[in-house]
Structures are given as C-alpha cells and as structure tokens.
Image 1 (cartoon, helix red, strand yellow):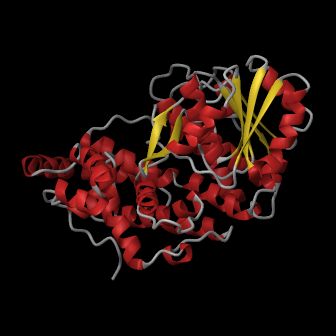
Image 2 (image 1 turned 60 degrees about the horizontal axis):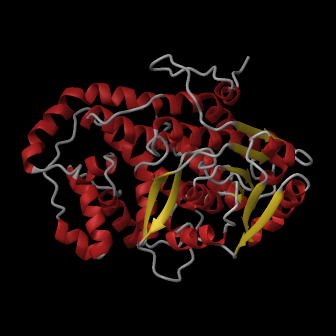
Image 3 (image 1 turned 90 degrees about the vertical axis):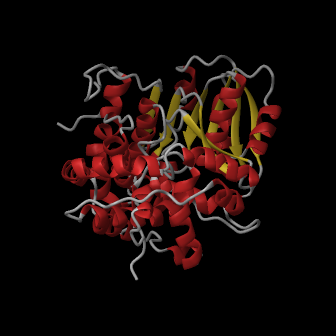
Length: 432
C-alpha cells in the first residue's frame, strides 16, 4: 500500500529518516479534495481562529474563489473582505498597504490565491502576530505550506521567516480550472527538486553546509507519480492535478522542516531571481514557474556535464570584487549582494584547501548526487508533455541577457551551487 505522507505528518507518525524522531509539520490541517464546496466554514472553524477574519484575495482570485469563501464563512464569522487590485506584487510596499488595511480586531487572515497572495498574507500575518490559512486557486507554486515568504525589498527578492499556515485547503476542481500557464509553472516548481537537491548536496559535501534529507524523502513517491501522470495536467485530469498539488504542498512542508528554502531553491532560482532583479521597468514578467522551467533545464544540463567528468575541476580564486558588484547592481543592491557573496567566495587563501577537498570527495560526490538527480533529458521530456517553455527566447529573453544572468546570479546570495563551481573553474556555461 502506498504511504500517504501528508496524513502521516499530520498524525505525527512521520519520522525523520536521519534521526528517527517524529517531525512536526507545523501546519495543522491540509485538505486536498476534488470538491470543497459546502465545507469551507467547517474547515476554518476547526483551526480555532476566533470570530473576526480578513479574507484576502486579488481582483482575479476574488472572482475565482474569494467571493465563494466570503459567503461560506460569513454565516459563522465576521468577515472583512480585502480585495487587492489586478496583479498585485509581493513587495514591501504592497505588504505595508495590506497591513494598514486590516482591521485592528482581526483574529486571523484567510488567503485566497496562489503565490503572491499567499506570500503577502503570510508576511502580513507574521507582522501583526496573527495566524492564517490559505485556500489555493492554482497549482502554480510550492509555497502554500512553507514558513517562508518571498517579498521583494528595494528590488531584491528575499525569503523571510514567517509563520506557516494553520490550514492549507486545495479544491482540485478549482486548481484544474486554473490557466494552463499556471499549471505548467507548478510542474516546473515540482521538478526543480532535482537541481535544488543536487546543488544542496554539493554545498554539503564540499563546503560542509548543513543538509536535511527529510524534504526529499517526503517527495520521493509523489514526485514519481507526478512525472508518470504529467500528460494529464493540461487536460485537467483530477488525478494528475492532485499529484501536482501534493508535490507542491510537500515541497513547502520540506522547507518548513529544514527551516529555509534550500530544499527547493538553489541555482535555478538564483538565475530566475537575477532576471527579476534586472528586469527593465514596465516589462511584463513570465510566471515564476515558467522561468523555473527554463532555468531548471539549464542547471540540470550543467550539473550533468560536470558530474560526467572522471576528474574533478580545478577552481581558481574568485575574481569578483565589491566594486564590480556595485557597478553592476547599484549601491543598495550591490552592497547587499557583496555581503552575501563574500561569505562564500573562494579566495586565494582558501583555494588550495578547496581543491584538495574537491579531489578527495569527487567520487563520492558524483555517486551521491547522481543517485538523486533526474537527467536533463527526463526533465525536458516531462515538461514537453505540458507544452512548457524550455528556452530563454520563448520567455522573451535574449541570449546575452540570459548569459549574464547565468554567470552573475551566483553573486546575489550566499548559496554555493554548481554555478559557483563552474564559473570559478572556468567551465563554459553554454555549448558553443
């Protein structure tokens, strides 16, 4: 019988594969079902929130599900309807406005939406010291059950610690009706587990960064089920959409368990974040997961090429300096990026020890990462089943712009990835 690891987590029966202790997912209730109509008030009541709720949606998600949630909760709770405008941004300015709009008497927030609404409500709930729950509207991202919120501050996208939701409620009929682009985006967010785990294992084995196995153990069976059913996603097949929803929720729980986004966000996300940070004002942006489809394939190919080498790379001291970063990113972003990058950069004093370590562990590193990584060809074939964009040009990115992002994105955050290894070893990131 296939184990339901979400149920095991909620019942306190899932044990850490590395330590054997029971893991607390923090989230009290997770319900993924074909139809939640008529159950909304009971689901929220079970969370013990109190009587005064702020239901937060945007102009689109209010029509998709928010109005229905407000009506359902209005019979048992005092409901403040907060409808943000069209396509709100998860940034510090929007967050301030949301917090200001919430009634002082609010007992809890109920988010109705996907990535942006969930992040804003999570961050707002943390700021005012109130709990929150979320009713998802699209299987487009993996942050529903995480305890971090991605908020842009002064143009830099950052992950902030925030309380995990008490409840995550996903109506599969609603998710299956989401725009196909959002479903494609969600599939990419699920598949990037492979490149993220590979990068994190590299950092763990090579620079002795702490590492957590539980997020990946949780995903193993559900991820394979998603890959097997991927062709049904665009057709709105409930079984396929349920598999995607489960992977996204478990991915978020994995981030909560390990206390950061490292299990789901590494080199592929750094490239995407760099593109976001340097996007010209007024340029329309693809969905986050659409970007991740492209960057995940790039990272999988790069990781594969490096791990195919019988002999380890030889790294040189990093040539990146503070003045270069400030010239490229501006004073505020440049200073922040330098502080992040300086903590991990390979200096002349460290390079000999680094290369000795790389030689000593190369065989074990190749074996361990190879055992958990999905080949780029397999990822490409799965994404092709849903018609996902897989090349930079399909997202409107020029070759020059994408090259810059792949080369310099490692400089924006203190996460050691295959990007660092490749650039400092002089590996060509692109085939000529």
